[in-house]
Image: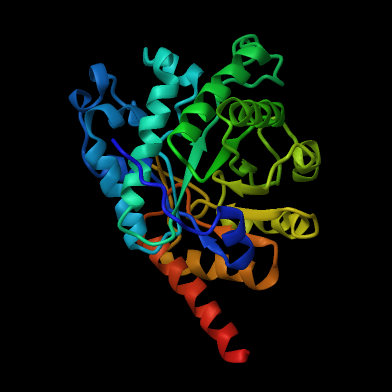
Length: 323
């Protein structure tokens, strides 16, 4: 696969000049393809990141559906592609190569669009280094850092425009992942922005009880460019945390679920409509000037992103008419 480097505005410059729109959920869109075990590498059902090897056309189609909906940025299908996660599927020794391929595929999807950005997605390791639990805390800090460093290296070599540490539940792991990103940047010699997201419950706390204030303070001086929230809740529950973050110094990324998940026969269902999501995120943009990125997580699809595009364009049009 090839990836053409276009002469587009640098990501951070774009972020300063306008609100950027991220894409929506990947996993649910993959499920719409009705995959069976044979569709995954070695028949490993659920190995979504591994589809780069067996069905890259599926992933490219999903990327393009979000780009067609108006997304400025697409996240790579690498949420579970740190070495620790890939080891579970027997592909840990290919961490750099797989992440590079995944990033290149996203770059290819952007080729026919103007000024679109590829964001390297880095999900959690599946372990909680802050935990005293003998199972969740069994990986050493060095092992976790290496797992993220190899992933970041592959994504950077695949020419992502930025790295995103996302859906983070343990602030110590976030620190480790940030350090790993800096390691990869130094090793590759290619500098890219680093963003990180905390995932909070409806009470504004991370899984191990860390508040948004403590989470932000812990990582704010580690050379990150954007701090934000994603997953776990809908936009309503994020409101107090966004309000506090707006008083800090970093650009804010807000990527909520389509509302709080509801249990429907053992299946998580997200019921916020595109119009409801658009109104909620548009409200954040109206009230909080540091919110520079919006998008959708679980339960969102191209319809939600299309509505957010409309909201952003509408605000821009009103602003121009006032000038």
